[in-house]
Length: 159
Image (tube, rainbow, N blue to C red):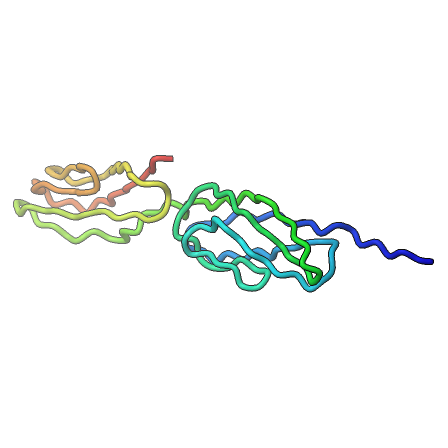
């Protein structure tokens, strides 16, 4: 008499890191039991979803998430695991590519913009014309001399 023993069903995957706003894809895997497998997940961040055995989408939020996964095999056996999923913020970048021109003696204002990172942002600028200053994300004032200097802006985030 021969006995055929199946190894116990278990979840065998981990989840790769992701980045906010970038395509994410992770395939869930299991071993043991009797294929085919059916998957369920709980705790995915907004923007990600399960399609068959694959988690896909573009996460809208960053953070570390505890994702509960459950696999069921053809024989109705189940196995569960809690997996950690790290979604990192999008890279911080200045999105303002140019500033409008100004005139001597005429009030001036321009707002700087950035994306990614972890708000709030802190701005710094060098090379501003005389009469102009930076407050928060706004360059303003009244230029007192005509100069064609380059302005260099930098941004840092809360992280």
